Length: 135
Image 1 (tube, rainbow, N blue to C red):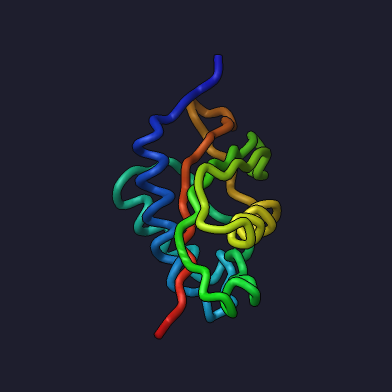
Image 2 (image 1 turned 120 degrees about the horizontal axis):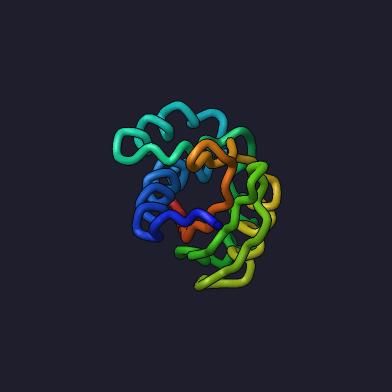
């Protein structure tokens, strides 16, 4: 039997996570640099055991910057039992350049496996990443 976690919980947690890294557009930071702070935020609300092992935030494409393309990419990722991103789907995006950037980054994200009832479990999460230009 496949274990499921409510979409509301997963969305809430990932939005907390994304809100922390979304402001690092110009810093070229990676997930591990803010992992402890993100995990404290996530685990203070609900302990799903989702922990980031490695990966980088999406890069802001130079062409999108030049053309002042901004906005939120909403996407679904499926994390397999080993912690790898198994599937990625864009739900909405202001521009294909931004979608491609998030897709490219997500291919290299690696999480601690989610443990449910003592067993590794898959999870599907709806998340968002905000691209914005500073004035």
